[in-house]
Image 1 (cartoon, rainbow, N blue to C red):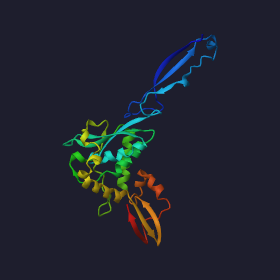
Image 2 (image 1 turned 135 degrees about the vertical axis):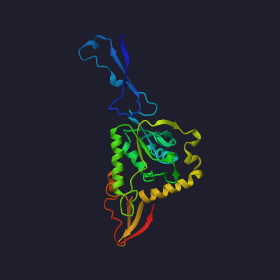
Image 3 (image 1 turned 60 degrees about the horizontal axis):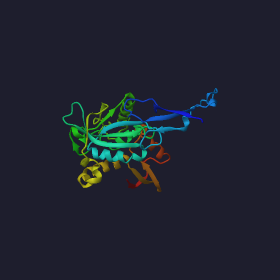
Image 4 (image 1 turned 180 degrees about the horizontal axis):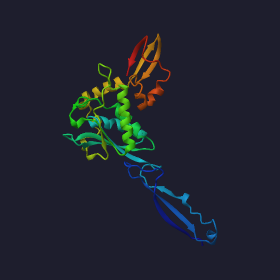
Length: 286
């Protein structure tokens, strides 16, 4: 009778060049089979049945993932933890709060380590989430939290990520989204250290400190209120009337000019909506 000779071949799934910071991706196994019948030895007959059995060795995904990691700091890590956990539907895989060492700081800095599928969500998008929940002009910490433990930082893996961050810093400062002084000069974004990844001496929080906003929200209620006010002021939306015509909604109205280069979604959302100028009446904010 006919017999088939089968052999497994293992290879790395690599449809994209890996950069520093990529988490190791799963292998695939191809089972190639060749019949030993005389017909299989005819020219062109020895077509390996590669397509018959390609197995991706991944416990939860049916496609090859490009897993990457980022670490950011900006105050009590429980708040950033919650913001990134809420993005799991968009491609974030794990969010781990903890502390990391930064040269020149007197104590370890609270931060979050995020693993994400770069085929679904990009570094720039994650940084937009960070900017919306950071306090980059605060020299002493973040929001009501003081000291080196609560200062802002982002760890970059390569020049692409470094340029992404430094360009955003330049644009956000120039736009004045985070405030201006009496002379209308934008405040500098002094509360952000750009460090080389991986984060030094990263230590995850103990289990009892993880998901603190779910397990112990009362303890963080005052800090949450300060953050909510900041978000509402900078990134919320305004309902208004202009020249007695009502029903207008403008998103993140303080995000103007260079800020829209960092947050292009607001340019699209506000297309055709009047500016908050002239004969207007504010109907609500959120």
